[in-house]
Length: 514
Image (cartoon, rainbow, N blue to C red; front, side, top):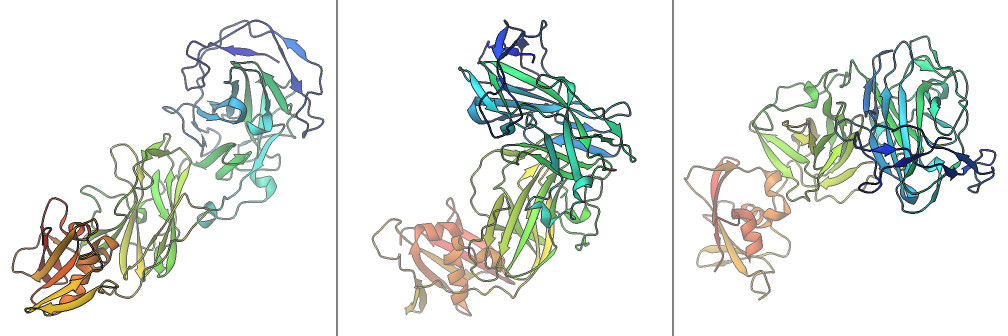
């Protein structure tokens, strides 16, 4: 086995195109045989092998390749730097760098390069099954993960969906290799099960092993089914994604076919307008939902680079009188995240006509519930987008009755001198926040905006909903509450809001020192 040492100018690290590797002195290394895969102790005699007699340049491996043997794009799922390889940090201070160094051509298969580095300051023995593709045999089959099964067709049989990562002659841990062959549809296959790798490897601080792997189909496989191939499990393993390079986007018929007003100031990337050439899109499981019901969506990235954003910055909107009105969320955390090439981010929305309740979805990356929704056309925006572009959007129709407006629970109504008061329990309790009033009345002014029932029915507008539910044909309603409930309506830097609601213009005025 060839052994290599990392130049530790700034500490041991793995990166894309920036790792300096140089030969070192001859060192002893211990490799465990494969006769007992469950045995993590050495069974072979220690062997001593000198390092390479040359400098090792930074890798040219990349995250995504286009195959020349058929219309397929392959990507290593994970975050790579500027299109370079993906770096994982595994157990026992092991660093794993994985990327493609060759695309499949008529002369040979696609080649994946993997490097396992001991980033610790002490000797480590690594269980190679925890660092795929350095397992004893790197084989998997196409599987639809829980969330994917809601969008994808069933997978082919085991042989048709099988994929091997077969060590090449340029591998530190094996000597024997298989001779790839091309299948009837032009994709490369393995003629047999590739040779096994050891089960463990012992590395000194800064030492590493590198191996190259052919990406090969099962010997009975003709084509190259699209989807994700997980080696060792999604969380700790290696995942390859394959998609049709000539049809990266959706190809089915969308139920929503109408031309919709833009959700943003510029063009909106609607799912129902996406076609086979679309590379980033938000795909819903369906485009008509009856409340209560669930809607799952996945934000798909079929570009050659990661797309950034904030997963919590999704948005639910309703179309009313030719304009979109934002329903949820109101507040959100602001972490930065990304979706890597070939990957997708999954959302599940539980939609209720009533108050609703929180619904969990273990398969989704983010699950949220939204209650008090009436029937109509809605739009969901994802939280990720390409640079200088808006997030993609999907439209759907919700079947539900009209949302009723109601006076807040525990609020009481009274009259004094002709005025009607609705008093919340927080009024006069001498606790923080202090008391405040909200007066709502019809006016002849020009409205600054239009509010719809689904917006007014949010918890933050409980004072406004109460006023509109109680006003009827009265000249005005005075809501006694606290300044948080009142400022949620008028804003923190204003004491007046003028809006149109179902054909009538109202003014909502705050008194923060009643």
